Image (cartoon, rainbow, N blue to C red; front, side):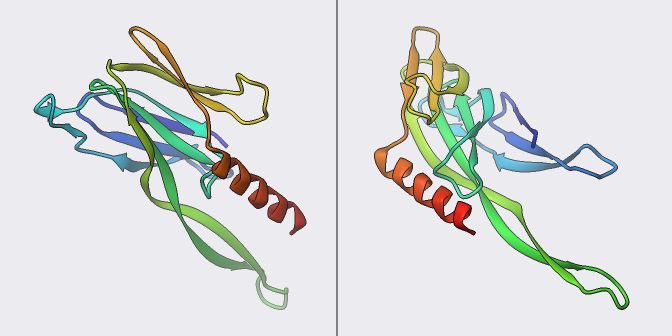
Length: 164
């Protein structure tokens, strides 16, 4: 699955999601966040970078990471809603299909750094099998590791999913 996330200097972030088998390659935009006001600046906080990252602690398995001019790192998780539909017609047996769609986003994690955030990425830099969040500012590289509780919950979820 491919996600396209877009941010603006006006404090707005939206996401587009790949749709397989549709006329349009992407659906959206879905608003992730808007009106990112910064009291310290006394104005809208500009979004300098945004990225969709794998995140084992969220229900969807991914999150949207946002870096701002004021130095905030905001990670949003999608809110999923299950929807069911049936296939088949006439005398064919109907088959129930359950899918999940994104109905919004909520803050999952945040921090404040002393300088504007210029880049966000994710990579397994310590070889433990879980990606760390990499954040660059004009003066440094910050590496954020998932909490042990999130890792345990992700492992439990993965085991349950494999047993289904």
